[in-house]
Amino acid sequence: MSGPASHFDYHGLHVAARQAQAVRVDWTRSLPRADRLRIREHTCACTYPMFELCTAAGLWFIRRLTDEAPGVIMESAWVSARAARDLWLQIVTGQAW
Image (cartoon, rainbow, N blue to C red; front, side, top):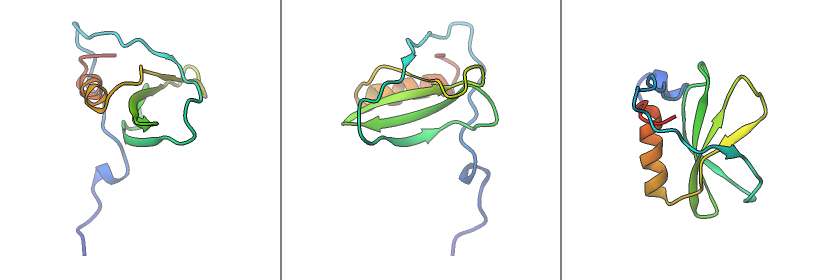
């Protein structure tokens, strides 16, 4: 039997504040490119923008959702797993936005 549920069982990560030297990500409007996609990680929905680390068709990318444009999903370039995980780490640590 496992222990009590942790906070992270229900919420995603909280993104760190954007750093002064943060790199700007080239976000483009999401297009239906694959039949299925898998969300590997996500940030907490209690603050926006919210981010999702996704994989589909053998490639990885990050989706960005804002409260300014509900229903409009933006995404990063589709890249290798390593490149997407590196970008994910930059975003959640405030080094990219």
